[in-house]
Length: 285
Image 1: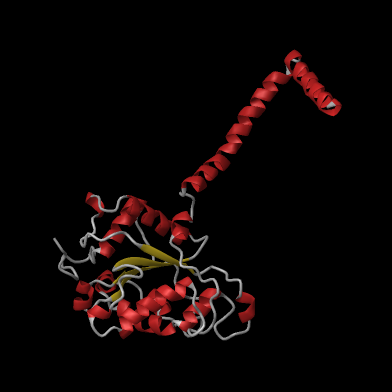
Image 2: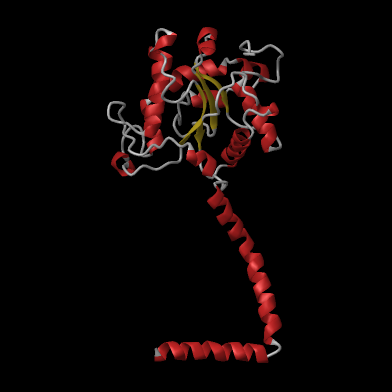
């Protein structure tokens, strides 16, 4: 109790000195103002994190983790593997549409291969957040009246077992092992996407498509493009049209605003493109 009284008395003397010393008060006021100004960025960042609007938060919410990724399809069962196996099964195994699995991840969804600390991935995230916030409005109406769905896989994610694979063929990172055991998917889908209407009409360079297909002989894994923004379409319309599964891809968004880029993404969902008036599918009423 004596110690507490002594501490209290000390602060009382400090406060009395401040009140009686005129020149100290303006300095304290100015100091407080600068403290508030310099704290604004930290307060804003904290508020963004608390509200879920921090950079990376939107993509992180839909991440399919690579944790536990091995170098064998028989033993690897990460979240990223599970969604990829559904895509592979639907695209390569289903003989009739009735065999297609739309229950696990939805009939139609975006799949983004993302990299942290990437300006292009940040731009994509902002566009997807804008699209999600305005999904179903006049400017962002899905032709199939479907729900917005997105899943992300982080190329830069580390796994707790990475050190066990430092000298293996498929590399020491979880994503390199993931690509290694799903190579067939990218080998088959890449060339098909390179011949898609959007790429043909836009006259886009083939480099990203070659790298997406893991056909870069020098660095097939290191060259994989991020972001790779895919539309995965398991609808019966896509089945009938021969554009089932990984049906569209973008490697960047070039609009000047998030809203412009979100417009590109809804066009992607609706299989529209700005280079031709004819569309891949007859859109639903």
